[in-house]
Image 1 (cartoon, rainbow, N blue to C red):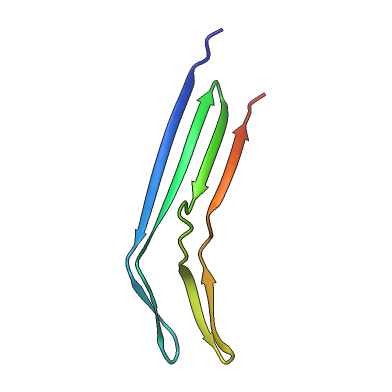
Image 2 (spheres, helix red, strand yellow; image 1 turned 120 degrees about the vertical axis):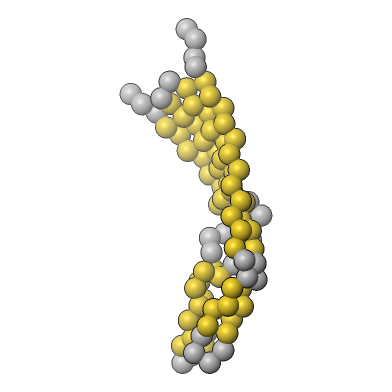
Length: 90
């Protein structure tokens, strides 16, 4: 029996230039940042095994910011995420 196997390594780099988030009374500056994602894929005959790393270097960045009467509230982007995925067809 011969298995037709494909091994694939994908790298994705996302770059975001510096940005100013305007709030009611002041401006919050988000410095430029880059996110690196990796994915290793092994597939054969419809089945697959995947290993991935998102935000590989654990870059901290703000996705949203709001100014409330109690102060500034912000949302950070997702931290480094590592995982494994298995796909099987029956």
